[in-house]
Amino acid sequence: MNNNAIIYITVCAVLCLVSFAFNRKKTLAGLKKGWNMFRNILVPFLNILIIVSVLLYLIPPSVISRYLGPDSGIMGLGIAAVVGSITLIPGFISYPIAAGLIKQGASYTVVATFMTTLMMVGVVTLPLEIKYFGRRVAITRNLLNFVAAIIIGLVVGLVL
Image (tube, rainbow, N blue to C red; front, side, top):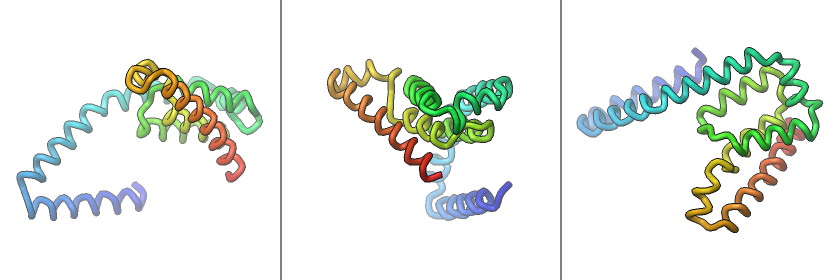
């Protein structure tokens, strides 16, 4: 366990004890609610991590590097942007995926584009968005965010 994890766990434990001292009932209710939230996300989180881990194991690093690496060019950027736009993965799951992609040889530009489109573009949720915001607003928002994600990925690539 790294030092940051030890610090975070210690701070959380101390704050939890302080909260418990002030109001036991609310603290226990908060801990119970937190446990239920954790239990609800645990199975989907583990499923996605297992699937991604198996895929990263099965796909050789040379293939990932070829299609998503620094030399993949516009094709790698396009793959990342499209896959990120149509994939519906929560943010807390996407970070381990991004780390795995980088370890396997994907470029920072591609991973930044993937992560940004994942968070900002919602092809899967577009029908719901159209229902609430209207066709024009929903499509405009998604297109602008798609372009912004590519620009962000390129800027990250230049910086790193």
